[in-house]
Amino acid sequence: MQFTDLGLCAEIQRAVAEQGYDTPTPIQQQAIPAVMTGRDLMATAQTGTGKTAGFTLPILHRLASGPNDRLTRISKAPRVLVLVPTRELAIQVEESVRTYGKHLPINSLAVFGGVGINPQIANLRRGVDILVATPGRLLDHLQQRTVDLSRIEIFVLDEADRMLDMGFIRDIRKVIALLPKQRQNLMFSATFSPEIRELANSLLHNPASVDVAPRNTAAETVTQRVIETDREKKKALLCHLFETRGWHQVLIFARTKHGADALARTLDKAGIKAAAIHGDKSQGARTRVLSEFKEGKLVALVATDIAARGIDIDALPYVINYELPNVAEDYVHRIGRTGRAGMEGEAISLVCHDERANLRDIEKLIKRSLERVVIEGFEQSAQAAPRPVQPPRGGRKPAQQPGRAPAKKAGAGKSDGQRAHRSGTRHH
Ligand code: AMP
Image (cartoon, rainbow, N blue to C red; front, side, top):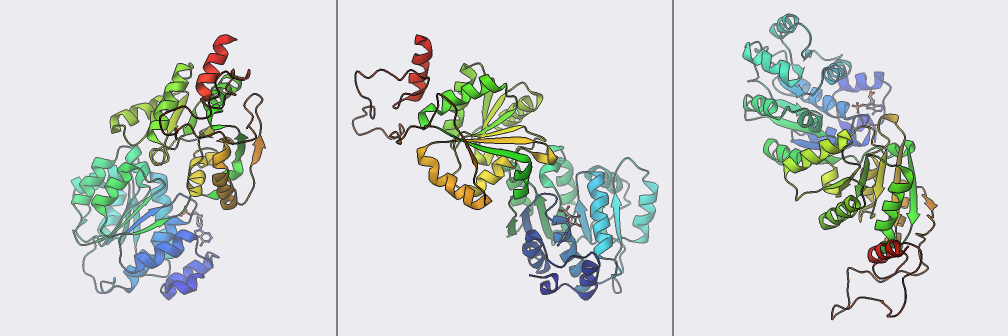
């Protein structure tokens, strides 16, 4: 697909060509046609995906080709409002608008705090079509009645997850309450947490949804390894890794809420300060656990995939897949939590026999095979052990052979590794 296939008006196509772009990025391919039709949009995309042009181009197209074009309109009030969390982003987005709209008679302005308000007021008076704003300064303007939001046709909430992290939710709601009911809404977020979902539900009507997987390139700064082991050795192996490697700030993924809780308890008992974070925890508990983890009071955080989407921690050094996800794309989401912003990161997956198919799917998706590592004492046995979660009828322990002593190495027992490990260490 080429930009010329998207049906953007000639002036915009010219500006895009002048930038040297001929192929739209995945988010642009999906978002541009949806926004051009006037639909609401929910897009999960990070910076670097081309998301800014993904909304700027179709918005410019709508303004330029709609009935209310600049030649016929009377009001000087803005028609588009883009709300962003930071002044840097405000400047960047407004620059994009300028770049792509340079052959169109469309005015834009960025307003943000930390600078004088009077020049902004003067610019607003002259007339602005596209207003890019941070919430605080926008509210200042609203209070002083120096901006009129009653003509907004398109509202964009950019980096919504960061806005929530920064505590802007009430400001956002105040702004939304002042917008005309009839409008197009676009929302962008790097993550899709329950809070983002809630905000999206209240803001968007029948949205088109676009999900651009996190940059697979994140993997380039992340060392990815697989430790082949047995399911029942995993807990002991994890404790061993903590003890021998002096880990801190480790995000561990478990498949289920129950599994996450159990693992956090095990680690805690082993003297590794840990907590679990998942959908059953209250918002308050999640916020507390997360800040303890960020401050380093917790060494390990055990999370489910869903809960982790809302976690934004810069430069997380380690991600551990205690269990591989069922969906290969989730692996990419998981390891995207480390190696951010060019920092080195390490992602380790503990893989047992019955996860081999999941591993194959992941390697197919990321188009590379992952390095295998064997840790002495925790080697994968030649055959898969029966799964302890599926006891045979009658509730008997599977494959437990009476009279057979647990193997000497910690966690080498086949039926219930954790117990074998504990009794093993006690006897030593
Ligand atoms: P963003 O994700 O919006 O911050 O954009 C990331 C960078 O990609 C910006 O520097 C854009 O100028 C650039 N960019 C946006 N769209 C394209 C495209 N279709 N082809 C090449 N580069 C692009």
